[in-house]
Image (tube, rainbow, N blue to C red):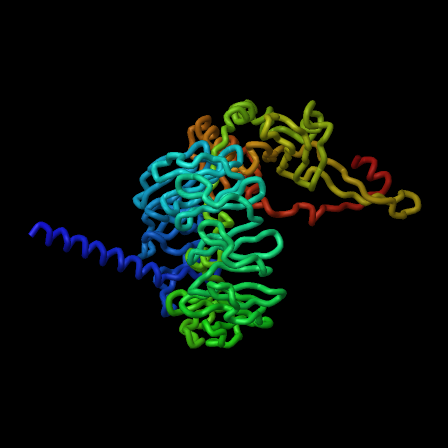
Length: 558
């Protein structure tokens, strides 16, 4: 009785997994009007378009990017299982994914969002495959960790790629070979390039031509092709000259070179291109669907994505539309990436976003004092800045509301302020046309400055290099944390901008950032900083205020 009950549980669990897998396979990410959603094989939306980006379902979850630019994971009903709070994330594979928070380390989580381990010493890491994940250390060497976070293959390779079956591709001294799961070389690095094994064969290049080796590294099809793809369903696409055909496992041509492009076989059909159009052939080289599409992808189950008039739709194996072209973009599943041997490009990884900016932040915030910043307040005038011991000599009016100073300060090995801009509440100059007082002819133009103009906000542009390069979000997060600590207020975030707005001439702050740059604003009051943020992408210089002066009037204005 007990054994029967246990067997029933196993069968139920198996059915549940099968159902999940079946539904996963029928959901296709599509893009319409700049939003991603999911359709089924009938073209019906199962999950409405709402995401900035969306990937295929794996392990019952899909990685999506929300409207705020953050990464999260949804279930098959489109509900968040793991909230969109991460800067980066990999798809789930083998029950685990890697995520990175703003300014954080690569962190391994399970499907409930629980943290399994954190990797502080790696710079990049891929998803798990075959129980191992590839990482790059701080010395740009490649190694592998297991599902507990333990380094099981030390970082020693110039390049390494995920395991596919029993082998992983590695590079040493410009040559490629293979290692086994124990980390030992099983095929010596000797090739100009290689691909993953499929059907016990792998493409290699000797630097001139491409052929195929077996799992011991022996040639089984001599290098003779200009390009080649992995075997699939007993055939492999190869290029001779400008044209593609297909060979069998003995290396003999089964379909003569005649196509401008050719993909691997999948579900009995292969995508080929002749002229400007794509179609589908069978294993005899005969067209099942004549060339007629702008682009086409492998058959995924019983349908394939095709492009016509810049829109994507889906056809059946007879070439009949089952979903009319209507989508701006689609995604193809991971299996297809592997089939075409482009998974090697490290398209699925996260980067370490941590950077210790404490030294710079501590030094920078010495500028912050009550309602003044860098010694300036809302009553500071252009005249005072023009006569400032640091900023005055290099001050230049970039437009009628702003003056810039290229001045390096607060230098650290990796971070420096390379430009400071002063924004004003009123125009700081007028363009005047000068006319000769006696003859009346035009003598030219000049700027007449209003040195009483008052300061509205200060903008600092940080230069990032060395270890700080590409760590803009980590530095922005450190600045945000310091502001919140000092002013006992929580900053808001929108579209890669942190901001805090305060009334009554109190200091307001904004930090606009991406991975490579950081802009820091301090405004003397809420409305003043709001004006700066709203004008962030505008050019003030297109409407210069111009007055005409006679020679005598010009002298008075000066």
